[in-house]
Image (tube, rainbow, N blue to C red; front, top):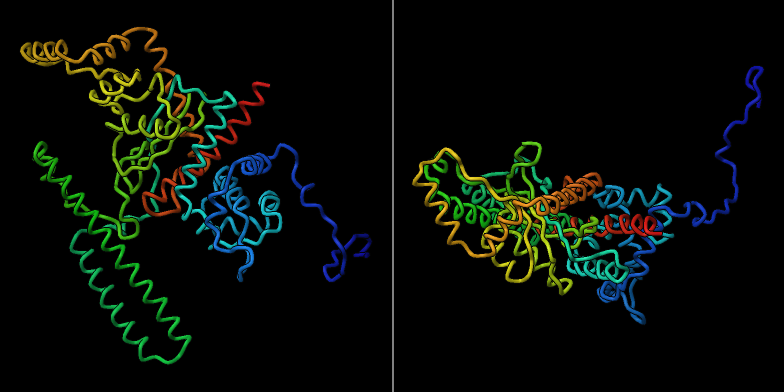
Length: 430
């Protein structure tokens, strides 16, 4: 076509043509999506298939292949995508996600259900995948590093309220449910009944969340009363406990940047080379005393305990250090320094207490005073790189609500992290 003196080729979108495309050729070799798919096809997913309701010889539409759904979520974790709706859109328009789906139809509802309904299976998958890496020689338990990282919950400041607000919302939800039930019984229109059923479901869920928030408030009040016995002046100056109506299990906590917002404290344990071994979700505001539960979780998964556990100063309490020493686990953590500006009598009592401490604590203090102990502890910074990698992949803010679903998000991130890091370690070794 000629426009003025210029000859150009104009688009012809009404022209019928045939496109012959092999979707496998659209993705280059070594792409991250191929690594994820290779991992998924090599893992035993029998339990995922056992959960499918559609069976041979029975009526009903076939279900989407769990291999595809799992691979989509793992690749989404690599790419920092946490929304089921966004994942559905990416399957339609992004080459890598289209390649993984391979023509399998998916929608956000099915994707969301698959993620939230298979928390225990994802936990087992992390264990199985790390066990396979152990067989390759990529994971060793001589040295394990553990730390907590805060992730922001899917709850806003306006969703928080005290006991009176939760009780009022619970009463409103109950009244609304009763009103909708009475209207549905007398309404003959099918479409209206469906609408009333949706409204009734929303009111019921609101009432359930209000009840969970009230239970969370009761627990927070118990903690406040317990702390008030030792820190009366501090607790008296604080307002009463509050819980979120959106995510009742989320708690206000201080993040690394100094901000205070709703979140969860995710506990991550990794091997010396950075492969994630275990994930725990907690609502604890600090990591004190979590060393023992983490070691027990590792033992329940893999049947062995680390020779050395590298943690921050508050992670392992003195009782944990003694207990773990009895299991052959040497803890490497900074020795807290006591205040120097104290009375001589206080110093004498402190020294006498140290002399009467268990031998495990004396050994811990001694090894942390050596250059070798400090060199070993410096390797703890590896867990900071792991946490940073997870945060860079979108793990800083959750799209899911509840502590169980927070762990699911952490498990997906951990497995995706291990897939990418293991590929790098294999290439480096080769």
